[in-house]
Image: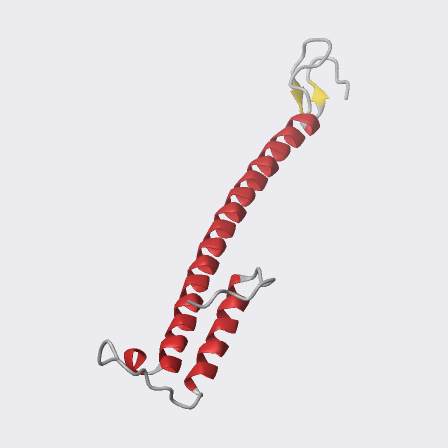
Length: 121
């Protein structure tokens, strides 16, 4: 079977390279196999068999790319959830910090930022 090109770490780019190689193999002059093992074209022609190997490698690379995308999507969702949680915590903290006190130093109830008892701010 064909091996992915060395140095290509991106699975999608590797799959594209394999597809180009498969197309190149299919555009070669036919090379019949002397003793074919079956009736399929890939059983009867060496270049067709080689093209199938490249296509198999491309499919494997596409499976890897899909798995990587799903893993990254799960990581992003987890990060977004953490960010939303932090935003909620910060929002609650800001409300506590900026909320006026409920009771004045004199013990009176604060209503509209003014103590009902001593009328201080």
